Amino acid sequence: MNQPNSEGVKDLAFIHSPITDLFFQPSSPEEWETFALTESQISFYKEYGFLNGIKVMTESQVDSFNDELLDLFKPTQEQQELFYHYKSNESEDPTKVMFHALGAWRVSPLFHDILWAPAFRMAAYQLSGQTYRQFHDQLFCKPAKHGGVVAWHQDFSYWTWTKPNRHLSCWIGLDDATRENGCMYFIPGSHRWGPLPITGLTGDMETVLEVLNEEQKKAMKEKFPNELKKGYASFHHSAIMHGSYANYSDHQRRAMVLNIMGDGTLSNIDTVDREEDLKNFPIFPQDTPMAGTYYPILFNPEQELGELKRNILTIKNV
Image (cartoon, rainbow, N blue to C red; front, side, top):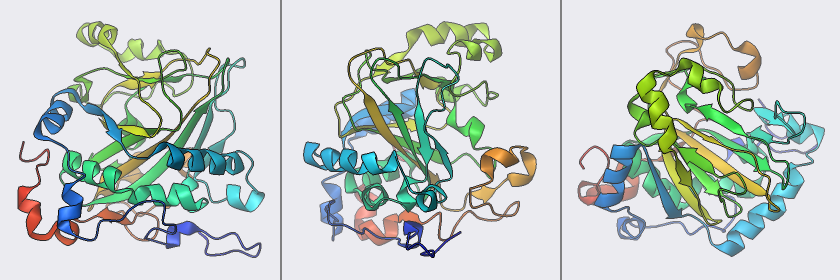
């Protein structure tokens, strides 16, 4: 892993605070309280495994991200080496395109600083109820007319190289996400199904049915469309079933995902056989805490909230 290399490309993972002034940073517990979720929002997440409609960015901030995203579509070789995963097209359908990349926070100042956006940080704390760390980020971009699918899956099926499951994801729209341009769907309550095997991420939407029981197949018919305005976010449990269909519309659909894990999450690397998929990730020996440069703490309630912590509702006290 790299500090600035010979070409001057700096690995921003070594910086554990905002680089720009794009996002307001609360300086007191009382300022944090203005970003707090309500009891009904937390209860909804607890019941259904997701919550949407949380404003994380203004339209002008989103425009800045989309400008910077253009550079990430054509990174230099040195920049590309900092990504954990980079596919300009990961679709398994030759007629579709799905841009998918992990690790933009190491390359782009704005995609680095979104990790410190206060609306994201506060909601992630309340919905996880823990001090948490950055796990990894993602970009999913579907062009107009021929944007590919993200097949039904559980996130933690891909993350079993960590333990226990104390993960949470935040999906942020860089465009309005609609049914027409391939918004994400959730299966409400499916976070209680237990672990399921990987059935593919960018192939057939129906493949997952092969590993579901009859009750689960019936639940799949009650899918919830996660339609969002750009700059708004949804949060989801790492075990919820979710996916998104193809984009046949005249509008592109760009999004980023911020994945977090509880402080104290351990490496479980000896139990998985996915060396090729994980070769660019910072890997720790079995049973070692996932921490350090590439997994910084993003929110510690004792430090950020102080005495106010006792008044802030979380999933653990709702």
